Length: 253
Ligand code: APR
Picture: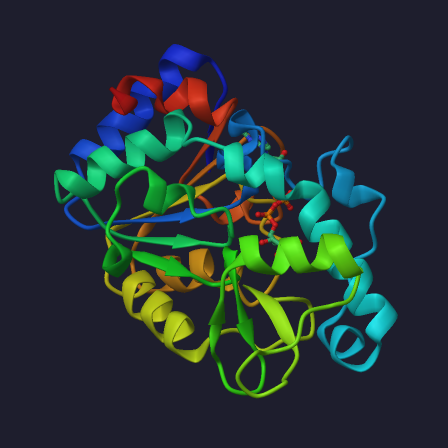
């Protein structure tokens, strides 16, 4: 494992590794979106450090916790709604457009890969998407602006207009099963690439954090781009230690 922390060397190493690869998979975490104003989860000043996650079972069983989950959602929603893609998103979008990247596996729910122009079929969302909601019973999609209007007026957690079921943002909470199709697509991508770029993730939440390992086990080179150490650094071929936007900037234009 080689750690590169000088910015020009990191940029050069990244571009050399990309040039030498034929089929790249990018795996993104919250760190790619922090420069867009979207907080990550485990940096010391993250707002999520003081909010204990509401487990899926609690959300379903406890109306008060459901209302708290919606309060949190709308408290942060303007940050997500106003966020624009950062240099890392634009760089990955360019690499998808040039067919260097075959898939982007993301843990993020901020829709910024889509906003940067990457087609849905190239994006694999392991933890869902926070820009809309769905009914847990019938699957009907519900738009957030309508829910927000109602919630701000009544404070009551939304129920499905079709079936009366519980409505939840289309994100995956702790304790909620990950989407099978996304997991299968991510496994197929990770086992069919020659370079796996893990970008902006602490790589501690499973099963998502298993995909860099699976890629290595199937012969891919693993590059970790992060501003702090991760538990998988020792398994990486190269670690680019620094700011994601700075490192990817030459590829973002
Ligand atoms: N440049 C480089 N690294 C950065 C930057 C940046 N600009 N900003 C943040 N980071 C790093 C942080 O130091 C941290 O190591 O990105 C990493 C983000 O880690 P987390 O906050 O743990 O986010 P993530 O890995 O995506 O979390 C995984 O956990 O809470 C659940 O479902 C949630 O999808 C999320 C999952």
